[in-house]
Length: 328
Image 1: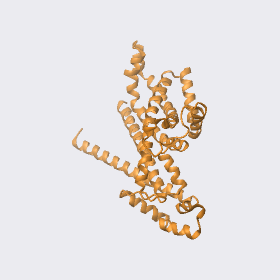
Image 2: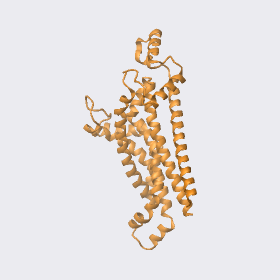
Image 3: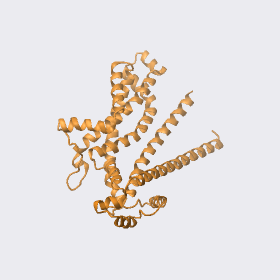
Image 4: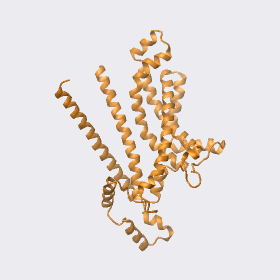
């Protein structure tokens, strides 16, 4: 490759990265704006929620002015964006705490829950998809595919309720709600509270992952080099390890990345169901208490991680497509 061609390639790469960053920022900004408008459309505000039964028109107006809720919607949204870009995510109106401080605990607990669940999802999803793909059309494939289809088609809260009914209510193996130790503390001081939420999230995520992995493995299993390895008399275990798995790494990685946004959405719902003290519960409380700054910051975290996962999946897909074009 000539110097000019290399320079053009680097320039295209920089432009592509900048365009992705710009699109990421626009998508995040637009989504946050929709969340802000949705909160404004709900009846009441932080002032009415805080005053409760003691609310009077004069007292509500006074407290709303104190909170800055009497200003126009666009002004308040723009002011929050400007402050957020400077590292100030606002204040929790009911407590006066900085939003950043209120996010630390729930985000860290959700990160722990999500990380463990993702490991389980990858392990179970890959194993299930690999078994189904290698036994395409057989009883094992039909059973795994049917189970994953049923789970994926069932709402998250129904899956959670079934797990609670079986393992908490009927068997009494685990607590039905995920309460931290009295006085706060780390999740790892009482790890049993994470078992059922992780089980619910992992079941949903794994069954979502099984289907695309199965399709990739089935397709790769019919490739000429894999068929040749089998015909040569090589042991099936070696055929899978040496010839099949290397060809499915990239598309499987793309499938894992594409499952992450769905996993995040499921985590938020499951946390609320189990009263797990994480980001999902914080989001629900922010809506119930009409906390605009807290809701915006929490939503921004969820949306940013989801968008990042989509971009990674897209990048892996583009790289895989380029590889196929080169091979062709």
